[in-house]
Image 1 (cartoon, rainbow, N blue to C red):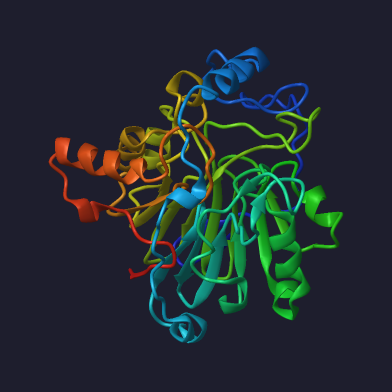
Image 2: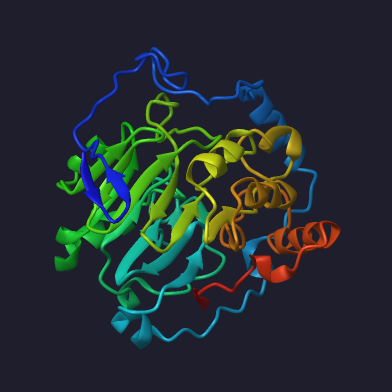
Length: 341
């Protein structure tokens, strides 16, 4: 145990928990969610795709999201103010205590195994890759292509600064990075923490799944992340469905000064509800973890599901109104917009 700034830091960098190690989310063949539910089958997937044929799903070019004009010179030189910039989808740049932290960095045009096919971005990154400041830490929620982007990770590492970037990943993903020659990787199980300078980084449960290729489902873990300093507490929910686990996260690690919570990719509910929250459920997470302020992520960037891309903010606003809560408690910001914390 090493004591730093009120925190008890215990590094699990070299720990390995074999599947079936007695933890409820470990199985003989990989991992599972803590709250069992009826999992959508492959037939359910086919049914969703078939029904989708009769629906009008607006293509990306039919939307007109206006990115914010950000001050890249400020972001590149800032070492004093705490800020958050939404780059798009689940990617945010958090500047905290003079360090730059990226969540699920994705700067590519497509979210797929192929660089010129698959899901195409609707809005360019609100901050281009070249405009990024030196990145100190990266947290990865899971291995899906819209969260773990090969091209972005390799570009981060190819930069001279990338050799000094620490990547935090859920169990099982360290080997993916090592195959690319990236060694500064901290692999954590749920509720494990790692101390880095004045930061405490903790992996927390989420309700989701993992699959990078056809025959390897749930072989690696999925997670949300908590980033703590002496004076600030940040929660990144990652990609998740709703479950009671968020109340436990709030009890154990909250309250939070700021959270980044997904609000999109939720229709049709009969198929998506297990793994993607609706805006109303996102608000429940905000309340469960006792967050003073939250920012909406995971919307308006890729056409993943059936709802219109511009619907999630409208539904979140309605949900806030029903709860008689102010809009600035759960913010919807533009791609590229920076808020001072």
